[in-house]
Length: 178
Image (cartoon, rainbow, N blue to C red; front, top):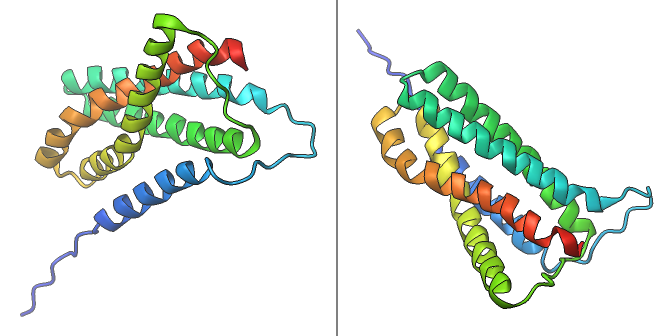
């Protein structure tokens, strides 16, 4: 009699590969020439769209946190799926904008400039960190590795909330200079 065991899906290579690819593409946008579309599409609307998508991500994450604290796993999952959806749409919009437009410089000075750059730098660093954290947390959740999921989610959730909120703050602070 032979016993067959179900082989578990190894999600780690996907998490590593996607994390490297996403962060590499974002960094590459700093160095590649900007694409100028001939369609007449006004790309300056995209930063506002990015802020709206970040706002939705923030709200979905708060709702997911509330639902898991209430032990409502079904709605927790739904809000996490929603957060991943708005984050993915944000990424597409962000990459589109930064492939077509030059970076906008902050025009303020004094303490507001210091605050802006503190928020911006922490946002950028943590945005790079949150990619593998969110993917790993998500993978552990959908594969029902509950204890491992909980351990990493304690770090992922506050960092992802911070990144999504500071994305909106960065937009609000720099929007007068577009």
